[in-house]
Length: 103
Image (cartoon, rainbow, N blue to C red):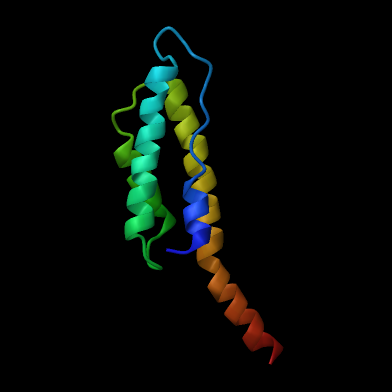
């Protein structure tokens, strides 16, 4: 896995304001789930790993999270990763395409 993917996976969800149902300690479960999913992806992803697979991995590893605010933060972080994942996947095509067009 390239350094671009590894750096991208480090962008974990933001914490939200603590509530009666979800304090900072409970929010650490989301951070831990994100870290495990990111480690899994960085260890197992290949060039064929799509953003849809990355999305499924993050959702699977954080399926136990029930706090709506945590899930909203997870969704924002996943959208960010998925958008940038697709950009990285397209980079080799764009570079090789630009090279062949300029020849």
